[in-house]
Image (cartoon, rainbow, N blue to C red; front, side, top):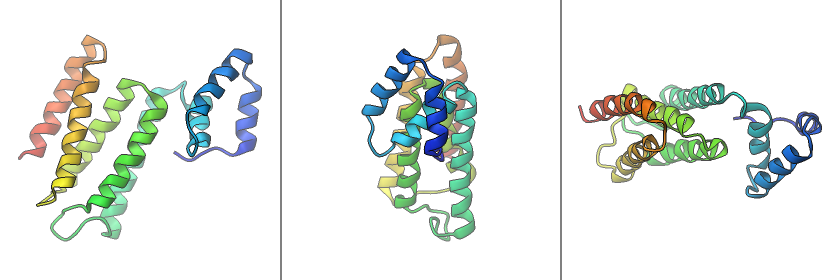
Length: 168
């Protein structure tokens, strides 16, 4: 997610009443480096969680496509370098922390795992990358428990499709 300019943030802050501004500032105080990105989310993206999740998925697609094009993150056998994978996961975790919505988290994490499967990325002998992928599956499973029971079935179906694809 690209951070908005200070002038755009000021305009959005001017529209808020005292209580809303107070809540924004309290949340902002919890973060330091990502403060502009957090404000961008709170002021411009939080009202459209579906759009935000789609934007994060598009960014993940772009990251994986950049790997395929440049070849810098994937070697000839399709194995991804653990540093590249860690970078994507760190960015994804930071962006999901802004939202805090479990449905958004599920959509993005499942999309990330699906991309690994679609790109046929294999971890080979790299336990670090394999463990990182397994950790994503555990986080998905944990987040499924916290969503509405009607949605749990759908997300469990998506998780099982990602899990079975990973072990083919």
